[in-house]
Image (cartoon, rainbow, N blue to C red; front, top):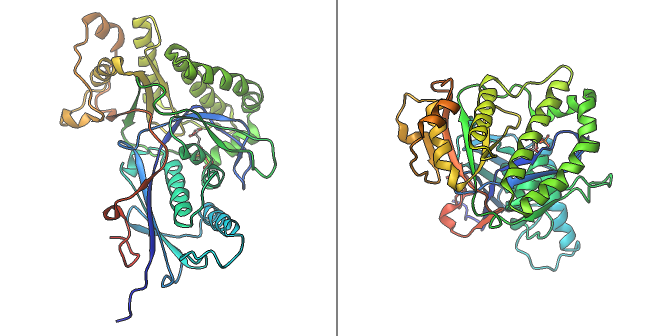
Length: 397
Ligand code: DP6
């Protein structure tokens, strides 16, 4: 039996992010350059994360990739763009010289295994975490440091924002080569300790139009999107940053809802129109507005991406009450324990007037479960070798 030659192996994790000022539309499809800046909150990896292991060895005969245990084609152009960019940066870093003494030969093939700690079927945005994780892991493997959001952006636009924790702006940039289209942290995850996120994972139904395709049709046909990118977003971005800086939930929540609504309005303005919101989304929207109206202030705020799950922002002191409202609004037949996942949620007894005013037309079973989470840090390096997704032979274990 041939002797096993050493492999270099690295594991990292990366987070999901949810935009409060949405990215929708590219001015360059290949480099993934957006028509407007966007802003997001990075979610905590204790609840939602991607883990990726990358290994390289002289013995590997081709680049290979396993997604949640299944081998997939590495030929995808966006995957290739990320791989080539990291290798290019590594080469540049070594200045093309051979005397850097690095054990890692850049011509060696790479094996990558990646896995989510949440069900892919739940329809939670996984490409942002996936590409952020891939780029972080490859960069570490090849000893590349510094600005990497530009590389993650080549995998998926929103992935560049998952390269940082807390509150993150993806600056549109001006240059045709995209060198200034980068993610930048607005505030760290510790900035707003009371902020909480509830992901309402809804039943059934996969998204009909992929965001990449959908946003291209919007760019081509929607005059509202053009106005949004040129006029509305620049103003909103400034305002949103102020609300975050001042931890002003009233302002933050209202603007988050308005921007989600305008994104979906541009989808309706697209020709032929795209519908990501459905009856259940509209039901949740109405519920949130009734809840806020009952309290006389913005206590919870919704936002929806290119899929039916609702993401709710709120503050810690409102979580238990709102979760109870969701339980009443979408009663489940199954074991109630599993309905709330993630961070613990306290118990709340709903006053009669609140129930009467807010829970008007329950829809049994429509929400599968709630995931309770909060803002979190950017990609993390995993030290513990037992966490590697690839074994010493470079294959998934
Ligand atoms: C609605 O980043 O998935 O979630 O750049 O084509 O990969 P590509 O698109 P993607 O689009 C995300 C759109 C969104 C809004 C947002 O996250 O800002």
